[in-house]
Amino acid sequence: MNEVLNNIYTRRSIRKFKEQDVPKDLVDEIVKAGTYAPSGKNLQTYRFYVMQNADSIKNLQDVVAKGMENPAYTLYGAKAIVLVACEKEAVNGVSDCSCAIENMLLAAHSLGLGACWINQLKYCGDKAEVADYLESLGIDKDMQVVGMVGMGYPDEEREAAKRQDDLVTYLN
Image 1 (cartoon, rainbow, N blue to C red):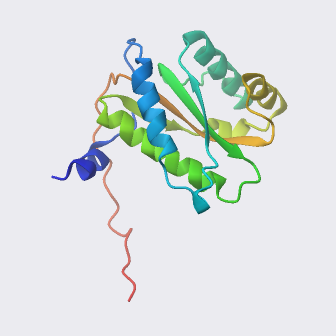
Image 2: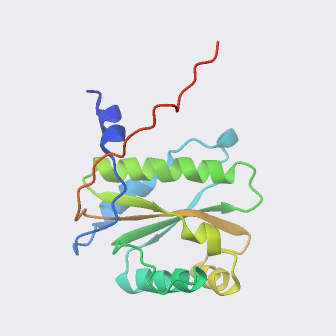
């Protein structure tokens, strides 16, 4: 099978990671794949903020837990987190960031890592405490975090979810 299609068909969202740290060069390669995502008018509206420090990831998790009003919230034990953001006013920003996130998910899988698209900042990123925290990281309040990519060495295997039969309609 074509190696690109095989990577697409075998990628799974991983939500359980081993304690092993992810080498910076792998994270750099994954983020680079994100920068190669298509973007409307090639404006490349996406921006990437990388965390690999365990204390920083824990602080982010705690802030998101408060923002979501869910004290049990976790970032699945990810060893690296990439926050993908764009200016709130960017017309194609959410689409651009979504393409970048998918590129990173596929890149992580191709490099033997597990990854998961994490959405919670989309829902609580504008809450004052969360927005202030993000600003303290260097993410201006005129930016929105479209999603995060949590990654690490997978500590689970996942089966593909059944694909729905009615997803495609051919139009003549």
